[in-house]
Length: 242
Length: 289
Image (cartoon, rainbow over all chains, first blue to last red; front, side, top):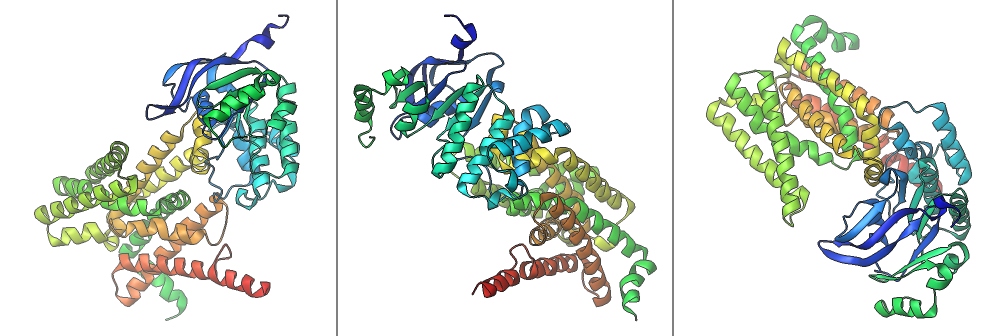
């Protein structure tokens, strides 16, 4: 163990169970997301992947067990929900929507200065949306909207990024761009946790995998987790999953 | 009579018309911007429901201390917020959805309000409460409506970013440190304050028209939130002027004339507005073929 920061736990779960109305959608999750790690959360439909992410974000309290977030707690976390509650009919430009990412620094009252404005443009460039900055969010395609949400994440500048199916329902070109952004965040030393369906993508890009099927099936290096035996165990709970 | 005389003489000649003009303009400046956010939040019927909900409190204040504006404001705020909170509570504790429980409580509130005014006051009082006395505004009433409009505009300027963020993406705001609940509650209080303050001008039933009609109309002309707010306020003031003039020259009751003028503005916007107006859509459809 040479690098302490590399091994430090960013998010630590101990026997955690999350669900609604007292019924656990996912239980017995124990382990930690190491600082700077890149982890895929995989599993069949109904495995409790989104529920786990919401639990980590603090939107659901653990039914049992515990969640511990290192350092300044959830201020370090940024979350991209599967279906954002964002009202796409609201008349706001892409530029202003992305600027919301600075909320933790600017808040409801402080001035939105030149430094933040420059960061918004950088984020728009990074996702290839600079040309659309002045358009209303309602005019964006599904893929462009996901790019805009990624730009907002960029602006949040969070140490830990939790993404729920970030590549679902986008074209392959957009998926490539967004995947490159995830890898860039990882290279910058941020902790990336992403719920993904595409196991080929998981094997190619993610060092760590957490396999769920209503409970924790396996958690560790991707090659050791996505074994035929583990996948069969996960499938056992949900027959339709391949 | 020249058109200029027609438009200016009533206000130049009569103090009560000038007071009515000031009162309706203030009501429009405060209420219309709130209406823009009600439209954006898909809560257009909330203003209507709220105007019924505040009635018993306003009536109780009116009957206990006459035309004491402080008493009516406090009573209106108390019953308005009580209805909002009770509706939220029932929605949380039972399977009844919030809109249905809100409707139930505001109807109870309306019944109670009309009962209070009828039992303790005269029929004249009831008419005043329901339809306002725009042509008989005294200094105190003018002070209340202008004060409420000023406070509303300042509060909305302070809360603007929070209101917009909460309206656009409540989930994001919650995950980024919150403030959404504060914005929502402050917004509800502003709606109630404007309904209570506007009730002497246009009446509890009609004041909602000044809140919603210009806001719904503005949406057909411009797309930005800020521009919609400015336009809605301007359309509200214009409807007030037009309504007062029609009422004066046609010897018609002022409050419904003002709301009908706002209604004409709305219908014209639905027909002609470039942002999704009917004629615009037809023209584009025709070109497309």
